Length: 449
Ligand code: TRP
Image (tube, protein in one colour):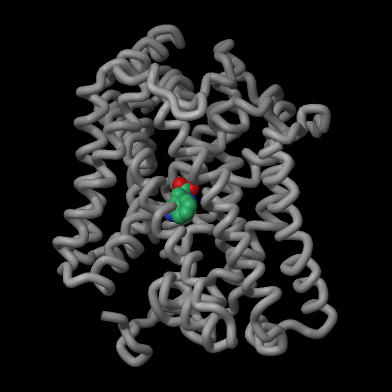
């Protein structure tokens, strides 16, 4: 049953909204994925491309998704159908909402596997496994975890179970309130690690690696990776921000709120880079070692710094927490959709969707061991899920959202809603009508040919 406008709840304050949006945006994307993608793409070229994509593509699409959601006041599929029909446009815009739900489903399957790794590392660090270990031993511990399908399955299951319980019993807002305390703590520990690195070498090299522009490395592959990651890290291109926008009160200033979310998200990612790369360089590790990067670098520092066991345990706990708040936002749209569109209760909808996601996650984790030879177009299952979502579903869904907003909706009312003067709105329109969509199309076409 579709919720009507009167029944549809609203955020009690714009602060609550920012918390939920930051909770969704800040997650494994910032701390696990960003650094290893930087490493795989050779450093600063990726960072620079990523910053451009965040500012010129991610930011406007985030605003577009909220604005459309606030107009529609429903789940993403119904929102796109309603807003399109009220603008006299085709109902098929509802497909944007549907592709978003599919995207969340696919992302959560592999996201939960990595959430499981983080949980496993909480126990490893808490029991002092890494104390005094050198980089070879830390690397061997990671490889042993990857080689064990059983271990990966257990922790993936625990992570998925937590997420499903939180969504199923509907306490997501309580979790988000807790984020108010835990997220700043996560930021603080990141900076403690950065401080440790300043004292222990590799720092200058890491700063140069991350920020010295080297455009020769700016290849098409790097650009599409950076673009996809801009979507992934801001949680856009999936309809979740459309759903969040539907709970947004009229008084909230979309541009300012988006600026806050984008800045916080970016600062956390860059801090993660400064926490990890100095350790990589001072220990002679390979920056391009892929998804294991934080798991083979950070434990070395925790194993040797004072109070490293406590700081490290807390750090991986907080990463897990950040991952859970993001995972909630990946599961919620599917559950909400099933609840509104079928006769399933919330509990049944949660059990059904999380079981399917869990199974898909098992297929993803087997890529690291038993099924490492199983490939889809040259990618193992884990990489295939990651690439299909980040490189295709998210950018294409986001592209459709910004085209819809900039080319299909009444522009005067958008100007009013954004509270922009004529001059400022012209700049907005150049970005929303041309820069953002063209950037997505160009990068995309280049990646395909
Ligand atoms: N942004 C989250 C992260 O960086 C992941 C995430 C949560 C996401 N919800 C999303 C990505 C929706 C794309 C779409 O970890």
